[in-house]
Length: 164
Image 1 (spheres, one colour):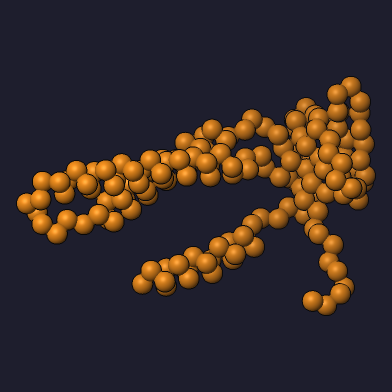
Image 2: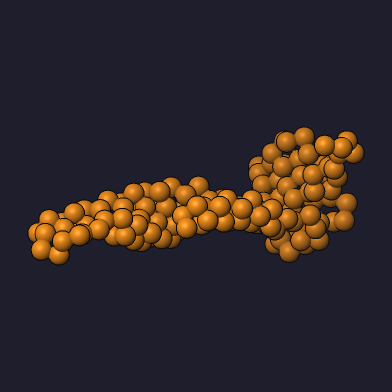
C-alpha cells in the first residue's frame, strides 16, 4: 500500500509541474498600473527593477532610478510584479500544515500493545511532539521558499528543431 501511494506521488508531481500557468500573453501587461514596482528580465538575462510607466504593442517603459527605460517587446523575457512579499505568511501557513501532518504521523507511528503500560502515553506524546516540531520546521522552510511575486508575462522558450 505504501509503495502504491509513493508511486502515485512520484507520477503526479511532474504532471503538476507541467500544469503550471504560463504567461506568454503580452496583453496581460496592460493590467499593470503606472507606478507599480516591477522586475523585468531581458532575453540577455539583464535585470531591471523599477516602477512601471507604460506599455504598447511594441515596447514596455519603466523608470529605473532616475532613468526612463524603454525595452522592445522582443527583448523582454519576463515581467514580475514586486508587490509586498508574502513569505512570512506562507511560512506560517505551511508551518501549521507541516506541524499537523508531523503530529499525525507521530501519533500513527507509535503503537501501544498493552493498555496497562504506564509509559505508553508518554512515548506517544513524545512522538507526536517531535513529529509536530519536525513538520513545523520543514513546512515553514518550504513556505518561506515558495516564490510569492506573481509573474505577469513570460516569453515562451524557443523550440529547437533538432530531434531528441
